Length: 108
Length: 119
Image 1: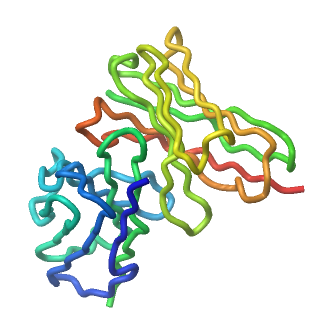
Image 2: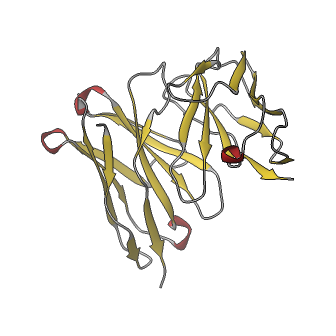
């Protein structure tokens, strides 16, 4: 199974801050990496897929980069609506659609 | 409008079984994979398994293989997750979600079904 390691697990930031979350895969997954946002009591919502493609309707302050085993999600200027938990997910094949452990973005 | 509507919350006793349903509408149900994801209380997301309604091709996470059964009834655009021999540790929210192919992630999710297992 491909393992996904996400860091940090918790992040405290202020409105307007630039925020970066990292996800590492235990083996190369090409660019088959997605980022999801989850708010309390809600289902996850996809933000980015294929490592860097923004899902329709997602604000442009969100961006993704990386390939192979190392990936990042960046929020260029954190907004009040962005306080949530973020998950990466590899989808390189059906043997495992593994999620990272999650990063909770909290208000500083 | 695309919708994935899941069945309602369940309260079960240890050892019992249950089926959670996920009904798709607003898109070609047979043409999208339906996956299941577990979220234990206060924890992260875990992929359970996935099924392609077009031909019932089914894959399971090794962590859940043998513990759950995924099925589909194309005639009513519904996928199912069966949990058997329930334990307290099966208490979680279970989500269904769709994906078009192996090159894309889950792009639409159900609202989640809370399963509580308690004696």
